[in-house]
Image (cartoon, rainbow, N blue to C red; front, top):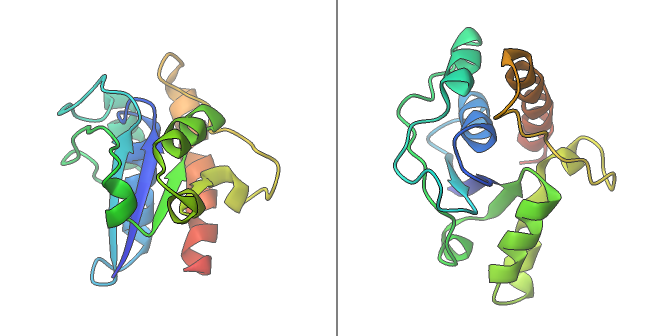
Length: 149
């Protein structure tokens, strides 16, 4: 079973959306998908209500997700670790123990725009349209990820 982790800063807006979107596209019998935050800001919390609303609009339920913090053991558990932005990438790579760990970490939008180093914008302090825009970016990226798996 392939195991995939989506990572952002607080694990309440972007990474829960990414987890939910990818989960809706892949068979639960062949893939395990989770999300985490590099910070410890929202441990145990639900995703942001705007993320829940946008996901629901597209038929995706992310209400059972809870925030958790990324840990070094995630390198042992997951085959792929997709991060939302360059700062998340740096924070995750700092925890890596070796090159094998580092090789698992990828910028999610690099799947759509190779070597462009685009970040998924943080919609947390933005309007609902910001969450819609982030959903569309993550939807496109997860389509590419699905095809590569």
